[in-house]
Image (cartoon, rainbow, N blue to C red; front, side, top):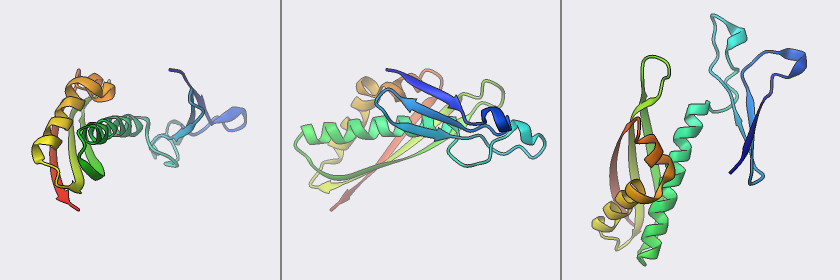
Length: 149
């Protein structure tokens, strides 16, 4: 896996904290820092997600992908899946995630709650590289709701 991340400040402006990531699969992702009123030259322009937000989103995408795939492989009629993530960070540098909450909402017809619980557990114990890696520094707490439809 490869990725190139380039600062968008450029030679002319030398300001802002925007970055563009070009992934090995041929996609781009834009990131930016938070504005810093005290030192504008050190802050971003709030034009894109923060790098840590993209890390959190990546973990959510990884685990939601697993949950849907596991349920489909179990021949369950899954029709929707979303995961809402929240994270707490350390107070001092490096401000790693210390706790991540993941609340899954799974929609389908006739899916047993035990199947959803099992899919989430399998993702976090065996398949989701992102959440397994983040669990080395953060407590990951999962909850879910199952909607019929």
